[in-house]
Image 1 (cartoon, helix red, strand yellow):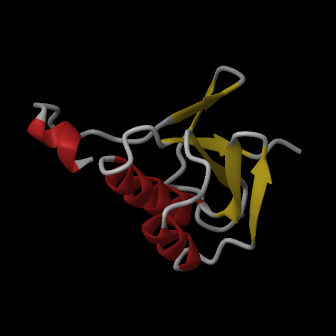
Image 2: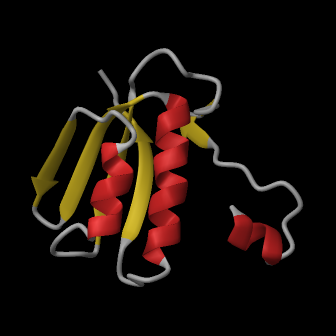
Length: 103
């Protein structure tokens, strides 16, 4: 977020749309319905593993080319994504994606 502010955005925010309906990840703090996908790296950097350990995520699953961290509540998901994006500045090939788990 800090990088976006330096780029001139006044109040950047993470938002999500699901099936055409706006979903506010920050407002959904009770249900653990979000996941973070980390791609572009063969192994998670140590800093990323430490950031994940502080969120209380239960699972880290490795799919071909993607690490999936889940389940997360809204606030933890936003905090982790911000931390991983900061770490991603060092590992330029690392990409993160926040998504809602669909039942």
